[in-house]
Length: 309
Image (cartoon, rainbow, N blue to C red):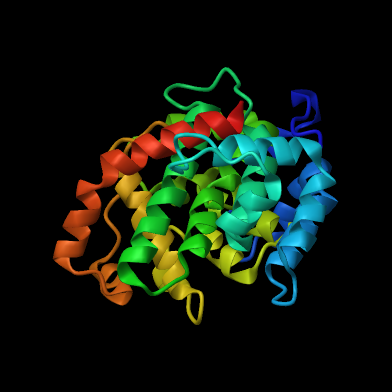
């Protein structure tokens, strides 16, 4: 799958810069998204793996057949599973053993990671922002979200990892296809206004809206779409996906505490107290999670390198 497009094919910056605020900017996003044709859908193998993971009648052999149809994916899965970031005591050489040991949800997550990571091939960046830094932030948010989920016991840990991993996918699309206005957003971030407000002022939508729109087109589970869309405003996410959005919001904030940020700028306020309350996180549990951040971030850095090379 071709992951990058020539800058000359990017939408006209004048068409989106200083666009008026619109509560429902789907038409504007649709116009931009139509110019990003090669990421409008995930490859067939990725969709097949998602469907198998969600099908209770599927087994390891079904998943093995799907992965074998994509040798590059199989190689990347084995490399990741055997990396120090994954933490297995013994090396695994058999793909079926890896699938049996790791499980459907983890293989699904690794497969989507493998398909998304080439989007982050390095560019010149802008100011303190780099694509590799964004990718490192997303992987770290995924691992911390998984830890938060395991601590609070309110959402499945593998669902939390995937939501954390994908939460800022809107940024990489802005970088690749709206590069000039994206750079102007970074330049405008001076702490005087929240990042989403700045994005909406300059684009008419924000990265969370665009990311949720793309994820929906990728046919990822609705819970993931909601978490991506509301990771900056989980209090607005009502219903069954609220706690997953809360989990990603907390993980995102914890990354910022250690300066592992999406844009190279540490400007994120702590989530409202009720977000921690909804997750059932006590002060002691929050302190324990913060104490584990350095270890989690080291593992995330190692995994980010393995996946992006």
